[in-house]
Length: 266
Ligand code: F6R
Image 1 (cartoon, rainbow, N blue to C red):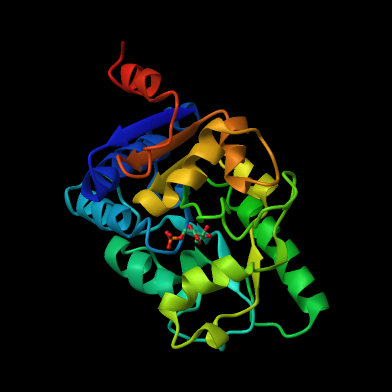
Image 2 (tube, rainbow, N blue to C red; image 1 turned 180 degrees about the vertical axis):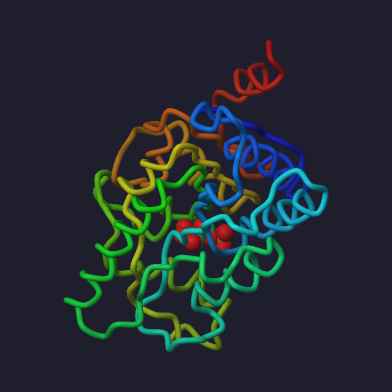
């Protein structure tokens, strides 16, 4: 696991962009260089990755990467929002990723949370797992972390081996996300989320976290025990995980001098 601490949110976006592009283009499985139709990017929503998406768009404009024929797979989706709801993660990703990155909308994959009965949601979750496999697996999964340590919408207590499935959102997550809705009552109670086992299958994980509200979750995830009580701790189990943090999010890290030495190549 690499822990990179940089000055502020803008620097996090730039460094995370570098790490994502390196993961997409530099892996041994792409020894002959990337063909854009082969790229599979795992997409997080929420505030944390927005600067990263802007940087990736700039990188594409500069000719460093081409997302026009890539596949994008969302981490999660709310259950029960009507199609086209502006806060459904499909709509958010169409706005924040497909437009700026020129990623073809038909190559954006989002778990289907539109069903109202449990059985159909289970079938849709299994179909989502198959779609990831058929695309060749996720090359780079972009991640944010919840203040309670959740990854995707895998809330504390989620199985470390879980696959895409329906989860109930915690009261904390619903109140944190109420800022995107008219009222707390409008925030869905359930979601369909990639499981922690699904996330771990991605070839590289790039976590972005900024601000002091994330400091506790970041320390627990990166330096605490590997535990379902902190889903973000699965980063420790992945062979190629990179955490890009600003100073405020990194404030609780005990091993900071070591991370800085490693980042400096010492
Ligand atoms: C988003 C997601 C969540 C968020 C997390 C942080 O698809 O699955 O895990 O990454 O809730 O959200 P922000 O970035 O808004 O603080």
